[in-house]
Image (cartoon, rainbow over all chains, first blue to last red; front, side, top):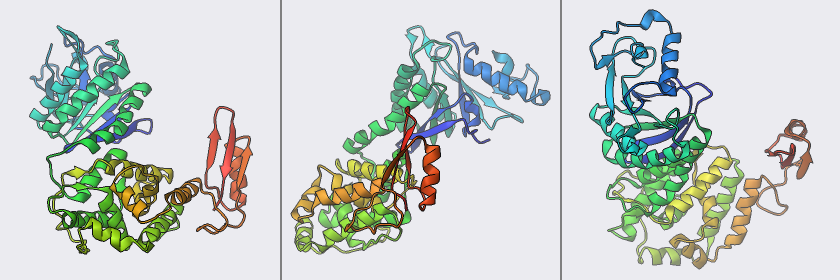
Length: 85
Length: 348
C-alpha cells in the first residue's frame, strides 16, 4: 500500500547498507515496511496515540479481518492487535 | 517492560506488515528512547526484518520533547544500523519540527562522511553514489561513466590511492571528453569551465606533475580498483553540485553540475591545479551564478533571448505567471512571503 499524499518522506542518510529516512505522517503503517514499531507505555499497555490510531484504522476496515482473541501468541493478525490496547 | 518484543503477523491483513514490534521509551531508569530505538533495530535484525518503520518513542502521549527524542533516536539508530544490516529504517513522526530536525541530519552527515576513514572498499562510483543518496540525488549515466574513469585514474597517480578526490574528478571531467548536450545554462557554464581548463597553456604541465610524469591511460572499463571512500574535500564539491542540481529541480546529477561546482570551491588540491592553470575562477563563478539566476549577460556565453523579462516585481505569483507566459515562458517566480509580492527574473 503506497503512502498517501499527505505523508512526507525524506532520505536522510545511508549507513552501511541501510537507508535511513524520516517520514512526516500520522499513519506510518501506510509506508512501505515489513515491521511497524508500536510505542507502548512503561507497563506494556498500548494506550499511546499511535496504537489508538492503528486500532481505529483496523476497526474502520470492518470485521472481515477480525480473528479470535484466543489466537496463540506471538502470532497475531493486525486486526487482532486491536483489542490488545 | 524494558525490552521490545516482536509479534509476527499472520493471515490476511489490512496492511502489508509482517511484524509488529512493541517497544517503550520508559524503563526503571526513566525515559530512554535512544536505548529503546537501538534495541528495536537489533531485534528487527534478529527477526530477519528488512524494512523497519520506527516512530518516535515517548514523544506523543509520553510527553517527551519530540525534537530531543528525534535527536537521541537518530544517534542510536545510526549506531545500531551499521551492524544490523537492514535495508531501510524509516523514522516516523507527526511533529513537523522533529521531521525537519531529522532531515537536517542529512546535511550534517556530509561532513561526517567526508572525514570518515572507512575500511570498506568499493568502486569510485559506489563511493560517490552513497554520498549522493544522502543528498537525494542520483548520478546520471554520463556521470557514472566519468566516475569509472576517475576510479581508473586514481592508481595511476598513486598505486596505493584509496579515495575519490576533487583532483581525480577534475581530470576525469577533462579527459572524458564530456560535452554539454542539453540546453541547461548550468551545463553550458560547466562546459565553459572545462574548456577553459583543457584550453589552458599549462594543462599538460599540471597534469604531468600530478601524475608524476606519466601520461594517464583513459579507460572507462569496470575494472576500477576499490577505493575506501571520498577524500576530505570531495564531499564539499559534490554537495555544491547537488545544490545546483536541486536548483534545477533535477533528481539526476550530471557532469555539468559537477563542473559548475568547481569554481566555488575554497579548498582542495583541485583548487591548486586551477590556480596553477591560470583559470579565472571569479569569472567562472559569475557565469555559474548567472546560470543559476536564469539571467543573461550581453557578450557572455549565453545568447540574449527575445522577449526576456529582466526583472519585474508584481503583487503576487498569480499576476506574474501570466505575464511571464506571454513573453515566452517563465523561468521562475520568487514569492516574497509574507508581503505577497513576487519577483520574476528572466524567461526562456
